Length: 80
Image (cartoon, rainbow, N blue to C red; front, side, top):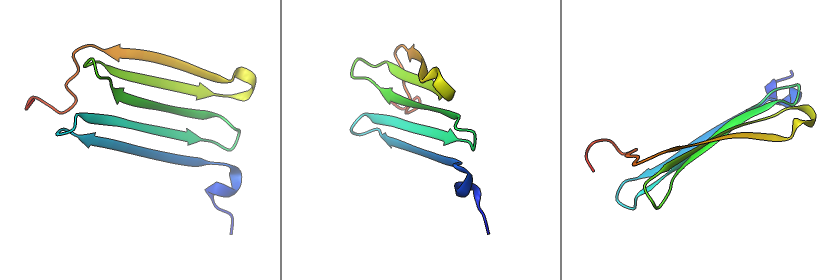
């Protein structure tokens, strides 16, 4: 019986949030049967900015990122 993985499809996601150690990062990615990949990752930088990278990979285009920064980010909520 075939399943989604037989066609090259996959998906993953993870997030790490530790307010005490000021760790905040994560990633996600999904690929389809045609070889297109869509994903992204985020990380809280030491200077307080949150860097977000969204990307695609399709055919011969290679890795195509879109990078943005959130100034004075507080991903842990209003408690800190």
